Length: 275
Image (cartoon, one colour):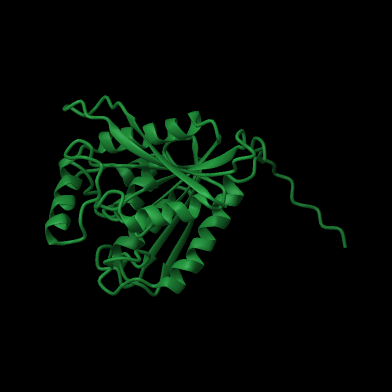
């Protein structure tokens, strides 16, 4: 499916400098069907904003029949341009990550979901995904009841609760409080060789989610951090594994937002099987 790429500059309330957030939009292009409706997906980037790998990742999702919104997460500090994959860019991105307030990250997510639900070609059924920092932001996006599923790729700082200014986020605390119980589906994907999220951290995230009865799938694969990044991954890109897990992500999206099953109805009756 062909795609189009545009963007919108959206006003924010929490940016003290009054800067808007630029949200890039990649959507299916069907010239003969201008009123076609598709589910929406918010794609959250790593600390480098919307780089080539992030845009390609989002474009692949859009080409499968989704309207995709990608927020430029560091609008408080600089423009929407991608931050280079070099030492200076890494230091800058990591600094911004802990200078930005957690509630400002949440506002960005809300604005991206708002944009999708108002998009003329979106049917209002929303999912989220993201990598690294973006994995954590996709996790938090699931607190919004409009987000029906999130697939989080090697989400950082969840286990340590160190996202945002003050390095004291409440992500797992909210999970323990029940904010994700019966509220969307979560998929956590980690590489076992990921030095950013050690085994103890992964175990903590998994236990917290399962203890809170969150609908979650937890995947641990033989890979390192950033293994889905097809550029400047420091030799960690695994194209074959990325392809397999991308297909899995699409299954989750198709099942949760690609089909409208109507309202959920709880039942205690066991399914009947006829032989």
